[in-house]
Length: 248
Image (cartoon, rainbow, N blue to C red):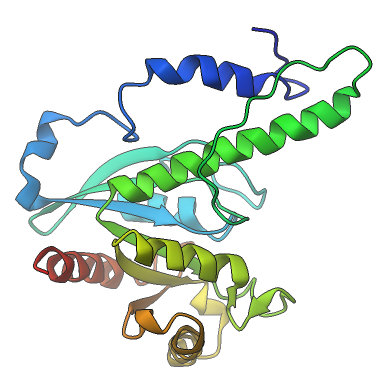
C-alpha cells in the first residue's frame, strides 16, 4: 500500500485494508468489567469540533487523559476510559468533533496518479480521514446508552449559521441521536462567560421547541468544563436520564 502520512494521501486505502482486522464494530472489545450491566452506564460525548469535549472528559475523569487546546481536530480517534459515580461504573467515550452532517460511508483514496496534483490528493485524503473519524464517532454513539451533547454557548453567539445557540449541523446531529433512540443530556459549556445560567437554558429550550419539538423537556446542564464547574450535576443528570431511559 502506497501512502504518505506527510501529504495525507493513501490513508483511505490503508484504512480499508486494516478494517477487516478490527475486533468488532464497537469502539472497543467488551471486558469482563462490563458483564455487570446493572451498574455500567455507557456514555458518549458528542458535538462539533472544539466545543470542549476532551476538556470535559478530563474533568469527569479528574486527570489529563487527552490532549486539549484551541486547535480543532486534536481528537481523531474514539478515546475510551471509565470512572465511578455513586454505585455506577461510567464507561465513557470521547469522540472526534463532527462539523458536517454525519454520513456513514467509507471512501477509498489511492496514491495520486501520474500528473495528479499532490495537494489536491492530500485534501481528498484529509476529507476521507474526517469521514472515518465521523463514522467512528457515530459507532460510539450507537454503542452507548447516553449521549452527552456538548454545546459551546459562546461560539454560537455570533455564528451566522446558527439558529440561536444551535447551528444547523448541531440540530441535524441531535435529530440523529433521537432517531437512534439514545438517551440525551445537553451540556451547555462555557456558561461562566454568560450573564446568567437560567438565560442560557431558556434560550436553548426555546430553540429546541421550534426546531426539534420531540426534544422538549430534554435535560440541559450548564457547565464550565475548563473550570470543572457543574460536573457533579452533569453526572447526576446522566444517571437519572439513563435510569428513566432504561425503564421504558
